[in-house]
Length: 374
Length: 112
Image (cartoon, rainbow over all chains, first blue to last red; front, side, top):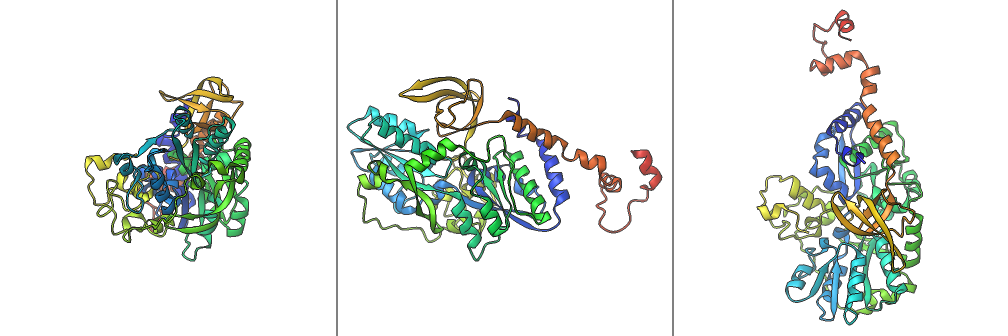
């Protein structure tokens, strides 16, 4: 399948850029929702190649970054218990809690393990029947189905020592929160392609219509981003606001019905606090009543947590697209990937990390800092 | 963490009542759960995220998109304003002033 490489083709990128330049007549502000897209944009300098009229505002779609501090602190408490094997994706290791991170818990004797898949954590539970195995289930609609299937399997196979610490989030309520914010400048959205691979496009027409914004489902290769921008600018210039799919090779309008059915069985919609942003109604999932036995928050009563966020960190404003990372006074000085104040400087999808790694902006990282942490 | 990547199915088997596959990601091979795309076949590609296939990669859509990219700009060259095209190639931006003297109508004809 030669096209896997062709989506990196610079000649085709030039054509897309020419087309965007030929279409645009006035300034437009587009938000890319997903942190993975933010990294593609900054890594390849797409924001600098686009005509000046097209501004890309980076959105809140980094699951690691928006996981609330209270949940991080709960994870740290649970991970430090001697009877627990705490499993997580690598991205979470350096995310700062109020007074430590998972990496430090491990260095002080906690059994913290990094897994590629939640099913690996289930396997660890099977191999260690006398230990409690907890998986840190965070992420958007893309990651929720794998975690849902894992809990479903745990119940089906009768694995009692497995549980999930859940902090899942949903994109459409975040779009609504952004559009109803008084400081909102966003005029269109590049929607996250892989979220739509799962959920389809059915949640978006109502939002596009209510807020009069084009919503274009967009992929992750540089050409995919440019095609998403091209289609969005075309709609903006014509005064249109429809839902369009610029990533048809991976997104069908109905999404993945089997994954949606599993989500509806295992999870239920709940209000969720987003780190740096605040509580957004109906923006998250928690385990449904049927699966409560597998909920780590119920299994381990972790109360009395007092959270403490560093005052200098402006990641909340970054996540809402109100400032760019380098406009924060701590960026690259008090806050670096080696010594992060906020999760946006840690995650492989965080906007601050993207600016730090790919666009030095006057700061010179040491070689260790220049390589991704997770 | 949220990035899903395309991979090619090498083989498929049932394990603990679950449909699993070995999937090749450009040389790195991993175990992948196929429960969400159960009709995926050996040799096909899928978008895979944290050990789960989430959607079959549609080869025809991919080719169609690439063909569209190939066409962009070509139509502009074919049907666009020859004045603009010629001026752009001479480094004249067309914003006010007169075009470079050499660009008269006769020369435009011969240059096409």
